[in-house]
Image 1 (cartoon, rainbow, N blue to C red):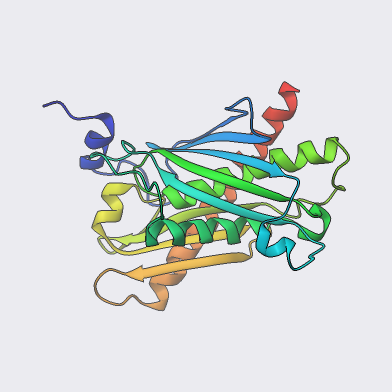
Image 2 (spheres, rainbow, N blue to C red):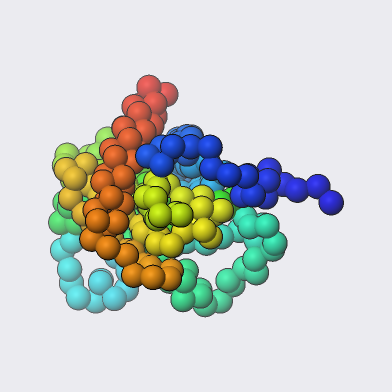
Length: 253
């Protein structure tokens, strides 16, 4: 039986340098209906991110008479985003899914002045079309672009003031593989990693979240520092890709 390109890629040794991202691509305004949409590709991982503006608050926040808005996220993997079919989570999301949704939501809320957003919410949906490692970090990085597109539309319509989008946010995975710090782990590297970590940062170089786990033996402060240096380098490059994507969207208009 022939293998899919993703299967073949997962079995081949990594040809990138330890400080190199996989090829990154943003396809902005990928869908016609959402206020913001982008298909982000990082290597063989592909995540469709859409931002929906709702002129109402979630019920729990509406009941508190809050004056500020809200940004939240939902995450899902399509049934054949992986090598074997994954069952749809039709009723209650699994624990992993809930944890990823909360991570994406926290990361994107950090980018927005919720007071300036007003009494409305933006829902960012992140649907994994194809998974080859780093789906949650790709969702955050692409989700920010979708969010930015939606807020720019609100600004053009004079519904929110300038500065509602306060900062850029992007994320990347890093790890220790065969004793070496490596950037942007695909599925094969993630399986082989002694340590894996997800890092979320702003364009000012400040951390939003750091999630790191030793898969076997504990790791040293030196290993942690090496991974954080690589994460910062990778996120700087991703921030440039985000800005280029937004410029491309403006050119189309």
